[in-house]
Image 1 (cartoon, helix red, strand yellow):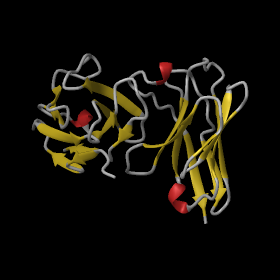
Image 2 (tube, chains in turn red, orange):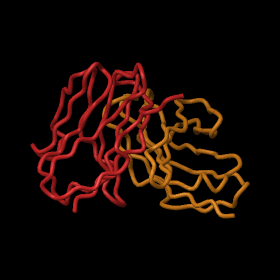
Image 3 (spheres, each protein chain N blue to C red):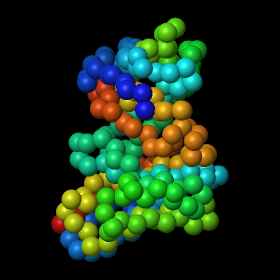
Image 4 (tube, rainbow over the protein chains, first blue to last red):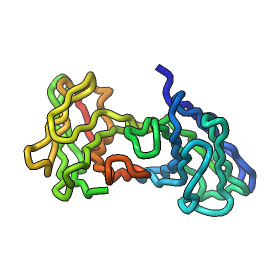
Length: 114
Length: 111
């Protein structure tokens, strides 16, 4: 069946540019999560959505990062004025509800900042 | 999340069973044990979860000790495609956000 889909799979951009990463969760999943994974490191939680609302944005690394979700479906993670330390794989996951497991992950967007 | 301890790496011959241990001695009575794996260049993949009883699905079996302080993930016939990092996770209250992935066990399946 259809899993979590992320696009683009790879993104290379110059420092200072804005980027937008997209996540299509599994249909019917009301909870959606964004994580970041730097090369050789573990997963770093960024933000989650319950429906279209993000109750806690404190995990976002800086005010250059923002995320939104519409229609309890697609979510976009936007990074403004990218920096080299933003280079990482950005992973999206979804689950039926916020306190329900398992979370199912997409294959991520590999972001490289030159 | 309850702390889990896994060996950093293991090798397994192709076609043999891979047995991956996990210690979770601080687990509480209503917390589940979840297993994920991450194959190179892919996102984490859910494998299996359990509370008390042993569980089996098309991917693996999960054996949980009677005192629930440890568990073993069993891949009955490992293939080269099972080479990955395997994570044992005990989410607080079985669903709290976010999932916390430790360092896991790097399983290498050898031909």
